Structure formats: structure tokens, C-alpha cells
Length: 376
Image: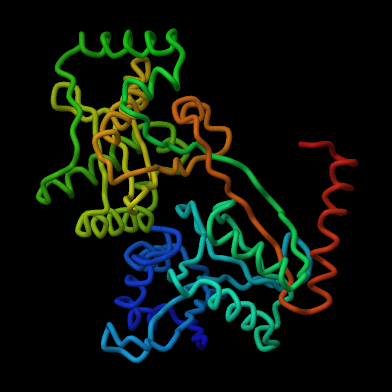
């Protein structure tokens, strides 16, 4: 096995077929690190310098692909000269504003060897980084378990810097049983009342994007509805930034072409008043974006579309879970989706004593900060 470090994003194009094969057979699905998503993200949001991509290859002894090698590990990294305002160099898994999971891609059957090779790469003095931050990985997932095993086997110092949970959808026997369990009767009746009030205004219809010729109109409709509300006012809507709008168009188009896009809308008299967009990664999926027309906020169109999504997912047995990709304080989905997924950030040294000292000091620094400033 060997490591190939790519520092020019254009060079990644050479590895796209192998990269996609790796993503399709990874121990954990992560759409945000698949080529059809990450390449547009690099073009739109990458810093001027500091990105490097660690590719781990192994010889393909079975020769199934007709190639002498198999890509079994993919780590997108960002190099930083400062870490949390400290003048110490670090590598971290790269995350941009629209990336909600940073778990690297490891090929099933090669995962333990990949972890070993990656830490051998970290121990190489050529990159000069003192710290490695495994940011925004799934807590308790296969990759996190591999890290824990590695730290235990090597007695390597590490620190759980951050941890939180976010809402996760898992289907029940049927949608009605799910909602009865998730929401108290009073809330269910309140939502039924709002749906009835919306029905009184005109013809209400739920739609799912199906026809390829409708894709661009759905993308444009989503961007328009999102920009009509508070996100447009404060300038955070995708359409407020040409680069972000181009990125959204690119990744939704790519996902649709691969059968990986679930896009739903709520219409009132042929007018879309809410949209939601999810990215599929069998056996799971990731809720990506939602937008609603605030002129109809009284009727909670976004919530009604979430309810429709619950019914839709119960009719899709191939989707066993959906990650909300929300913040931990999202009250809506925390009530509607009672299951949780842990997201953690783990810090480790790269094999140098100075890095290990900093890792060992972090728990003490957090304690001192809480003593001085309080839990907030």
C-alpha cells in the first residue's frame, strides 16, 4: 500500500472513476466527499491554498478492475498554520459551509490497513504539521471506532474536542405509527388544523421531482423561494452568491443524474410554497436544504412538507435512515425525528512530542475556560 498526495484539485479528475468506486463501497457513506459533490465544492469554496488530498492505494491482487491498484482511502485535508488561535500547524478534514459530514472514505475490507498507512503518513516529518483534527465525523460509527482502536493499540494521546447530537430519522412500522410515537396528540391535531386551513385557500398538492426536463425549473424554484425569506434579507440565500448558486445547480444536477436526488415540493394552486432537497446514499440519506414561502408561514408549509417526507420515506424500504444535517438546537426536527446521530471532533498528534503535549493540555484549557467564563 502507498500514499499519493494531490495538491492541485485538477489532478483529482484522473482518479474520479476509482474515487466513485471507493465511495460506493466505503465502510460509511458520505455524499459530501463523493466526487460529484466535492469537485464542485472545491471549485466554489476552496481556500486559495492549503488543501491537499491524501489517496491511499493498495495492489489489486484479484485484478477485478483490470487495473494494478485499488483506491482504498480518501482524506481531503486542509493545512492550517494556526490551530484555534494557537501558533501551531495542523491538518484537519476539510469542511466548507455546505458540508455536514467529514467522515473520510475507506474501502470495506481495507479499513484497518488504511488507518495504519494514514497515521504513517502523519508521522512523516515532511508535512511539518503537529496536530491532526478529525472534525465532524460520525460518533460511534465505523470510522470513529477504527480511530478508537488505533489509539488504544498504540497508546496514542487524543482528545474529544467537540461532540453533539443531531436529529436522525429511522422508519417505524408505518408512518402513522411513527407520528403517533414522535408527536403528542395536541401537536398532531394542531398540524392537521393548519393543513385544513391551507386546504381552504385552494388546491394543495405534494410533488416529488421525477421528470428530467423539470429539473432546472425545480432548482430555480427552490432558489427563488429561499431568497424570498429571511435568508434573502440577510444575504445568506444561495442565490445571493453566484458561486453558491452555481454550486447548488451543479450538485443537484449531478445527484439527479445518478438517481441520488430526492426533491419534494408543496404547491398551492400550482404555486410552489415549500421545497426540500435530500441526497441519497443507500442505505441512508442526508437532508440537505429546505425553503418555504414566508407569506404562508402561518400554515407551517415547511413542517407540512417534513410530514409528507415521513410518509414518503416509509414507502422507500431502501432508505433506512436520513441524517437531518441540522444544528443540535433545531427544535422542529428534534421533536419530529426522535432518534439521534452523534457528530464528534477528535484531535490527535502526528507523532511529535510537541503535538502530544498540546493534545494533553486541551482538557485542562477547557476546564480553565469554563471556570473563568462559565459553561457558555
